[in-house]
Amino acid sequence: MQYTAKTLDIIKQRSHCLVVACYEGATLSDAASAVNMAGQQQLETLVKREEFKGKAGQSLLLLNPIGIAADRLLLLGLGSPDKDGAVSVENFRKAVAKIPDALKSTPSREIAVSLADIKVKDQDINWQARQVAEALELSTYRFDKFKSQPSENGFAPTKLIFGCDKKQVTAATRGLETGKAIALGMNLARDLGNLPGNVCTPTYLANEAKRLARNQTKLTVKVLEEKQMKELGMHSLLSVAAGSDQPAKLIVLEYKGGSKNDAPIALVGKGITFDTGGISLKPGAGMDEMKFDMCGAASVLGTFHALLELDLPMNVVGVIAASENMPNGNATKPGDIVTSMSGQTIEILNTDAEGRLVLCDALTYTERFKPRTVIDIATLTGACVIALGNHASGLYSNREELAQALLKAGQEANDRAWQMPLWDEYQKQLDSNFADMANIGGREAGSVTAACFLSRFAKKFAWAHLDIAGTAWKSGGAKGATGRPVPLLVQYLLNNQ
Ligand code: BES
Ligand code: MN
Ligand code: ZN
Image (tube, rainbow, N blue to C red; front, top):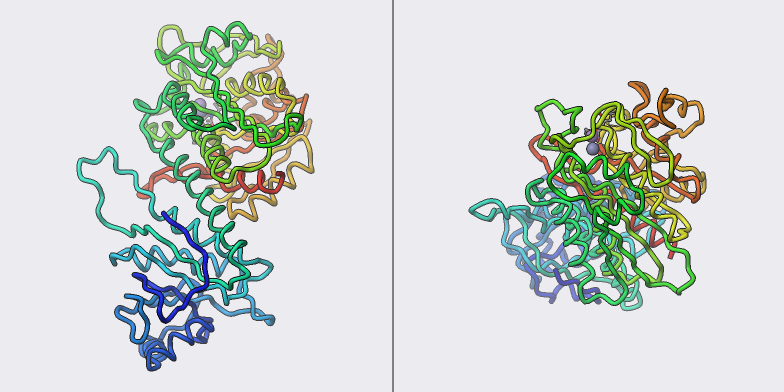
């Protein structure tokens, strides 16, 4: 999609649809009033006739509006403003989310938006433009490459003109770029997540990372093969790959946008391209959804995509531990003991707790970059879905300041996390009679003990863990990857450039 911020003549601007807004009680915004005046009070008449109240999330579409050059006019409800005349962040988002919804049955492609006269509580024009761009770019997403007929329905915008004052153009342009970059990152993460396990293998993920780096001067990608991982002592990671015919890959991305000596932020992704559970085989029902077990890796690649789009002046490292978890004759068995790259030994009591086994070696590998912070992202536990559902990612950290920064980024980007405890009391659930630790901690607090396990490999840096098992994809009729937590991660990077 193409994005432009400029001063708009809302009467003369040609477009397939002009978008304006209205407050609760059917009070037209300044832009909507101007349109109304130019069109013989048509808008006012229709608002009354259709009993349009202007509640947040309501919309009214006019075909062939009188007095303006646009083919259609879309009126968005904003709800009630506060005493300073500002609408809430939630209501503005609700209104913007209505644009694709309201236009999906029309052939509208070029959209002009005149919302700059709306005050949003504590937000500026950059933020507003970003919301509109993100919503429109996300609405273009389709995943129909495996359908013999492409889906033809839906809204397919190609151009957004964001109207604002002349002095706001620079800020609005940056907002449009940010929204677009986040949405493109999410759409890449969604694509990779939605791909089936027979296509999206560890090798596929490695190639995808290399493709991102093509023609980029700031990004380099290196892929470690099993042989090199063995030399490094990554026997925990390799124990997961042992039962699969697909070779594991450790994918290392280095983005150098900052100065040479700036310590990087590191993003470490779980990339299990299919999780059968291994010898501790999962039950059959719903097992197809374990193709999404690489959504942590996908969010790392999506975030790097956004990082390249935004050309941020900072250093970022990505490490992706990619493997299948399969049960062939070479597979790891319950009770097997492995030595991790850190030297700590692990008794594998359940081969289905494989995410932590690949991540622990990826975390140890990450030490070499002397990162200022390390964030791992993983569809790690079903228990996290039980605890938090689909609304928040589980957040754990060994530094309170980092936890707070990530919570804030999630709030700002509308991609929230919720902090969970990482108390010492939980650690003893990982005791093993035969090795330094077991890879499972029993039925209680399953998401916490998984994080506790990882914390033992994150002692040398400021570290946070995002358990995205509940947020990375949707089940049921709307089954598909969400692209989360790309917005949170990009926001965190934006806040720390
Ligand atoms: N990938 C799964 C976690 C998962 C399960 C995410 C269901 C979303 C939905 C992970 O590898 C796993 O199997 N975890 C086990 C851990 C257990 C054996 C301690 C789980 O959550 O059941
Ligand atoms: Mn598993
Ligand atoms: Zn898994």
